[in-house]
Figure 1: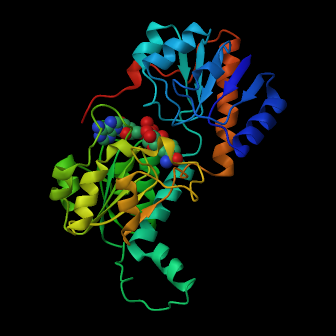
Figure 2 (figure 1 turned 30 degrees about the vertical axis):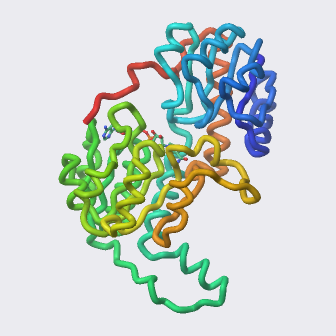
Figure 3 (figure 1 turned 90 degrees about the vertical axis):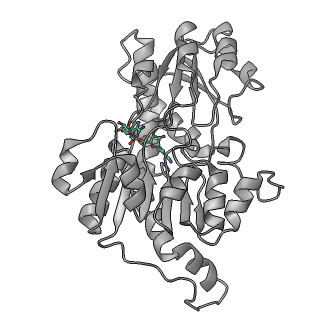
Length: 339
Ligand code: NAI
């Protein structure tokens, strides 16, 4: 099929081209820009659009795509919060995703962020490169015996829960609208959000972004956290009200933040803006704090995950071309109730 692939970097082009040659016969046209209403003309005439996390599939873009003959959106991601599913359904555009490409990639990165934040490894690295070998200000705490609060225990959250419980001896508190009974055997203590928030030394977010979870962490939640607790987000930026987090860091209620995703990341992340003025005051403020660690949506970025993303994405397109029922279809039924 003719596929236009948006938001591509060299690594996407390489992996998709290799996997396509190995087992598929699609005509792939790579575009660097992300899909927005301004760039949607690049998609005209393509039955399949392949998009990533910051491509915009809202109603106006979907209408333009439908008018240009698009019949399938093949997401190279698990999250689908950037797609207006109701509009896609109305316009008869199918949507497919990669539900699981490497939960290990994201969970391992999350654990790395937790360790870095707890022990100030990011600060220590910056210091020693400047011949500053002092330890003042780097005092951390043992994770052993501490309470880790995990919001969302699906593929990724469950791995983080197992690692923190079995690997570090943490007390794991978890909240999910659908608790995973297998985790009870690892000592995971399912509870409600208020108790998780009140008792956790580290809160890490692994639920999807839905209307119910937008700004799950806001001023009220931060005020209810343990004084000095740490917050980690590798899920979706809008789970957090970043301005409330800035206030929490300023007044010391929040002890630190590690974030791989940011609500306003779409025009920033994945780009080298080191020679430009970044006009996002909230992000700039966050980057000023010594106890804040920001990475630009790289938790997924392993060799294994890239290969799996390419393979499943091309497989989704091939299945669509053969007229098969899409195993990885995204439907409104996947949006889960609040909890
Ligand atoms: P999943 O679908 O396997 O698990 C999500 C879990 O969250 C489910 O168990 C679900 O029941 C639960 N949940 C839904 N609503 C909830 C609520 N209101 N409160 C508590 N729990 C709730 O998803 P997976 O694969 O574990 O991914 C989690 C998130 O990680 C994705 O939604 C995606 O946004 C993000 N992600 C980030 C990546 C990165 O590179 N930073 C890469 C891949 C995923």
